[in-house]
Structure formats: structure tokens, C-alpha cells
Image (cartoon, rainbow, N blue to C red; front, top):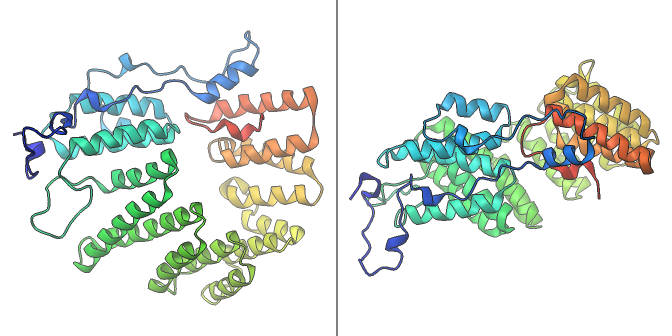
Length: 393
């Protein structure tokens, strides 16, 4: 028996699942990698055939097959949002890695699933994760304290992806919450044993935010508040966590409770701190005070809005509610040009820009302006851009 399966209880020869078990580098674990890109298709459909498009050519499997790709190269694909290339390179590297190098294989599988999720191919990611579960049959996905626990343990980031895919692919947010909770408990057990304290504290905070988000998707406001309340209770002097709690209450429509939390934040930081001003701006939005909100967001963004894209975007959106859609369009366009990666390829900003176009234009002019913005975004964005941001329907 290979070292891959060491520590796993053997199944009987009659077990129907025995034939389904695979090595982690088995080609049958993969689904075909989708190589199309929605933004590519959209630009080609809305750009004259005689005009060159700004998108790079789609990667081909042959360009990656038959060789290992270094972690440095894989990380470069992440930085450049070249998710199709990452999916192909990770697959090729997995196939070239010996079956007994479990740690390397699991790390490469994390890259692979991340690429599929970033492309929005959640169903494909779910199928490959399910095949991985079968490949490690008999071993737990999670860490256990019991000394007789199986030796195969999925890496943390892959377990996080496994949890998220349950919700994103299947709309099964309760399963997502269960898996995140199991991870959260595992991190707490490691903290109790004083193992990698700083790392597990960071993971616990991150998982708490993810659990709260999951609870919101489940429309379980009480669970979301309970998760965040527990997180804040463990670090009551951290203004960022209390701010997050306040913003959750805003999202849930509890304006009064949000105000109380914002007051707590301002007892922890100076009143002119950017976090305090951002909180006041968000509270003003919730209260319908658009002019005050705009001015506060501008005070956060300062003279270099491309370094504070979120605040600048919010300030410009306030112009719509003040009756000035053209001001928003002009300001967003300047921001996108000044910060093409952070702003020009932001789905949220593109959505806001196209909302302004809908309010300001119609007919052929509207289609022309949106086509122009598609070409701009195609110049800046990587793979997997959500084309629903263009509001074509």
C-alpha cells in the first residue's frame, strides 16, 4: 500500500467504494478545464471585427502539460488574475508529482480549486472536491486531537475552499456553515494547546467573518450577530472588530444598535481617525444624509482617491442620490484610469458606473457607452470577471 494511504483503515475487497479510490495525482480526479471567458466573449460580441481586442489569447492545455510549474510561477498567475493559466498549470503539476508526495499534492490541489472558484466554475470545483474526498476515503478532512486519527489531513486553505464551494455551487449554506464551524473549533483546539498561536488567532478571526457572512446568506441574523458578538468579546479593545459588528447591524437594518457600536469605536480611537470618519459616513448613508456622507467619504479618500478606492467609490455614488449622475460618471472614470487594477477592474465600480449610464443615457448611446467601458475593463481585468456588472439585461 502506498504511503498516500498509510494510516487509513483498509476497506474490504467487496466494498463498492474500493474501486473509486484514487491516488491524488490520478487524471480521473479532474474535470475538463473551461477555457472560455465571459468577458472575452462579450468584448468580441460588442466590438467591430476589424478592431483589435485588448484581451490576451486563451491558454491551451498543451502549453502547460508534461512539466512541473514552480510555486513562484503559480503565484504570479494569482497576482495577474490569470486563473485559466493557474488551473492548467496546477493540473499539469499535480499529474507530474509522485503519488507519495502528499503535502505537495494537496498544496497544488489548493491552487487548482482556487482557480476554478475564481473563474466562477463552482460546480466543477465541487465535483473535483468530491473526487478528492473519495480519494482520501477513510481519512478525515479535519484535524483531530485523538492519537488514532487518520494521518491524511487536508491543508487549511483547501478546507476553507471546500466549505465555501458547498454554498457557492449548491446554495447549501448550512453545510458551508457546518464546515466553517468545524474549522473554527479546530483552530480553537490548537489555541488551547498553544500551537501556532498567532496563526490560529488570525484564522479564528477570518473564519468568524466568513461564518457571519454565511449566516447573512442563510438570512439568519441572530446567528450572524452571535458570531460577531463572540469575536468582539474576545478582543473588546480592537476597534476594527467593533466597527465590523456595527457595520453588520447596518446591513441588517439595526440602525440604533449600529450607532451604539460606533460610539464604542470612537471611545477607542481619535475622532479624526479614518476608521471613525468611514463609520460616520456609513451611518450617514443609512440615515439618508447623502451630502454629509459624501463629504465624509471624501475626507477619507483625501487628495489621492486611487489609494482609498472604497471610500472614493462611495463618495461618487452619493452624487447619484444628490441628483448628479454625470458627476459620478466623470469621477468614476477618472478613478478607473488612475487605478486600473484596483478600480478599473473592480466589479463593484463597473456596476456603479453602468448604473449611472442607465440613468443618464438610453438607446444607441447607452449601448455605445457600455461597449466602450467593456473595452476599458478588458484592458485591465484578468480572468473570471463577472460580466453581470455591465447590466446588459
